[in-house]
Length: 229
Image (cartoon, rainbow, N blue to C red; front, top):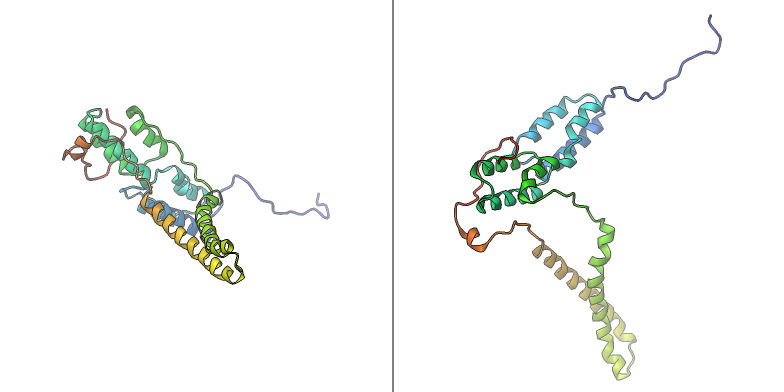
């Protein structure tokens, strides 16, 4: 029986397929571009394949299948470490030629953290996630040394008038300018030293073996496959 006052209302429904918006599509494209720039897809054509899949994505599930594993794919820096370990193992005679070529080709493609771990687990290495230090925590260690240099420069300018017992009021602008100039110079030197001393990870290689040509050369091409012997 019909009852007066009964109606309907719309409520959010969880678990149902939801269409993605154009904004979400653009954000996913930006994530793919960033992953490609970081070298997470290697020399494979995974980037182009995922862009094609993104163009045809309709639901949130389609979108998650394209970008959900980007954080697990290793970047170019970790890929270089893997290749260095594999090359060194082959140069030491630990890894035979077939396993060397197979693992090298696998490293050149899109590799997840777990897949990378299986490539070097029997060579004495494991994969750890590097924790990124927040920039605010790095700020004091970067600002303090140049600031100390600047303050010392300004104090040095005022030291002579103070020692002679003369007035220091007219020396204050010069001291402030010297402090600012000293801080700027120290910051430039620290920045240049940071760029110069940025570590480049390499597997330990004996000098004699490193000079020998033809050992541990990286083959061309890409491919998929698990670890060799």
